[in-house]
Image (tube, rainbow, N blue to C red; front, side, top):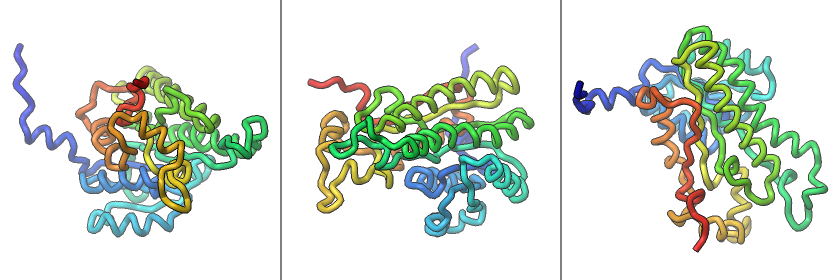
Length: 282
């Protein structure tokens, strides 16, 4: 049987999130807030979770009238009680959870090697903080909100991995190892949810390349001049598209993976890196 091409109206409906509730951890951060705004413009109901709610007020202003369908909720993604309390608030306001975006993560200078801080001297507390935030900060929200999806028999989880998971970068051992763990966990959870609960629960990840965030800003740009650091110059030289990513460069892949347009996609990590991973040098 020959199937007719999808018509435009049906295609547009695939990206209509009206009535869908999306939980975003790290939702007031650089990447999380951009994802939140895009979903708000597509009609989603948003539970924006973060430890820091102050930036969330500006985020709600950006959303304009769409902010009526958004809630800011304080949460510590490394504490199950905090996540469970947040889940109760989400249910009270929206009644259900359709999607979970795990955007909480990051690095810190104390877990980064350099001329004055060798790998052998990286403090264990800094290493543990970075590793826990990125890997446990992904797993624990999946335990809480993923359970709600398992009970309903449907849902979508989108994790944020990194190109570091494919090709570990210099200087950031804990972050690279943790993001590799996020990719592995994404694939594991995709199989687990489909086998144990429902094939209508999908789990995927995006793997951003080099995007300027609050955590890496001064690794890529000089704090005083704003010019590229040597590291920033090296990254641009090895990125065929010749620039860092903008947060809105993530949105096409994010909306696709959260929508019915990717209904047969699970256990996948999608690189968004301007060609960095494809380039092996001249």
